[in-house]
View (cartoon, rainbow, N blue to C red):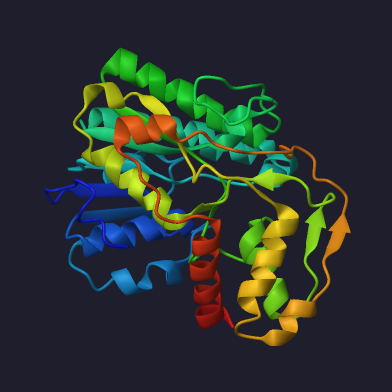
Length: 332
C-alpha cells in the first residue's frame, strides 16, 4: 500500500510492537516502503518470521526479539523512537476465556510497560490497537465512540483498560495517545491456522481444501469487516495529524457497513470459485453459538472522517477479492 499521500511527509523512526503479526507486519511493510526507519518488536508468540522475512535486508528495518512484559525490552525498543504503533497483544475472545491470566499479563501489564517506556523515551505520540469488543453489550447501532456497554469477555476488559490507561497517561504525563478500535480486520498475512484463527482466513482455507466451513450459530450474526489497508490508513493518519483536538481520544476503524456471516461465506465461495469451480457447491455447516460473542457489530466512522480525514477505500467485496487472491497465490 502506498502511504505517501496520507500526510506523513517527513521520514520518522517508528516502533511497531507486534510487528511480525498480521496487522503489524503490514504496517512495517508500508512504512519501510515509504522510507521510514522502522523497528519491529515481537516475541513471536503469535507473530511469524515469514511475515517480515522480506524486510530483513532493508537498512531502514530493525528487528528486536523481545517481550512487552519485559520492561527492559520495552525501553530498548523505544530508544530514539518518534512514534509508537502498539499492535502487540494476545487477541481472541475464546483464548481470553480459556486463559484470562496470560491475556491480562500481555494486554494490560505489557501495555502499561509500553506506555511507561514511551513516556520516558519522550516519543511524540503513542497509537495503540484498541478493539470493537469494548462496546460489549451496548445495543446502540451503529457504535459511536462515546457510548459503550459492559465487556463480555476478559479480552474486552483488557482492551478497555488500555483505553483508560492511555487517557490517564495523556492527562497526567502529557503523552499524546490515539486509540484505534479495530472492527474485524482481515486481509493478506492473516493466519488461517490455529485454534484461534479469525473467521475469514479460516473459512478460506477450509474452502480451498474442499471442506465445509462451520458457522457458529445460525449465520445471522453480523460484523463490520474491515480490510487491512483501511487499518493502515488510520495508523498513518494517527501519526500525521497535527490537530491537537484529534489526539488523546479513540476512533472506530471500520468501513461502516455490516455483513452477515451467511453472506460472508457465500461471497467467499463466489470469489474462490473463480480459481476452482468446485468450491461453489461446498455446503455450509452450522454449530452452537460461541460464548462471549457480540451478536452484531457496526461502526460509525463519522468521528474518524471528521477529525482525521479517514477515507476507507476498501469495502467488504473489494477487500475480500484482494484477500482471496492473496491466499490462493500464497497458501494454495
